[in-house]
Length: 127
Image (spheres, rainbow, N blue to C red):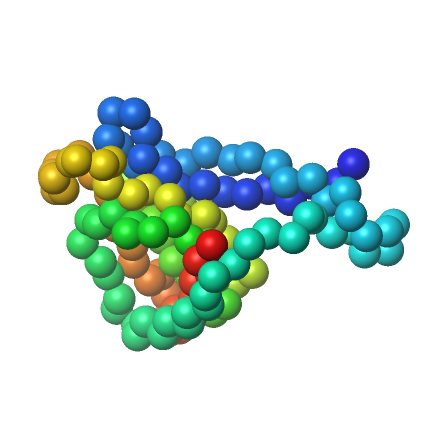
């Protein structure tokens, strides 16, 4: 069976952001067009980030899919690791601040920046 790899940015039990992957089965449709089950979506928001874009460490306020339409986005984690996403790539951003926790800039969240000389165009889909 064909699957789609869902890349997930999440908050681990120790409060640090990490990446993991999970498979979504494409078990609907037919042999020419394999589909996942319908996934709920609440809203779509588009973003343009100019050349030179960077962000400080932050948490996602509500889980959402992020799809890169143009440019290269680099996500940095507190452990120093990074992961880059280019046009057509995605991740599910779910690194929310744990309930009852105050943001600690030395533990929580991720940072992001644009790599290269093209503006970054992204689409956020909230469910």
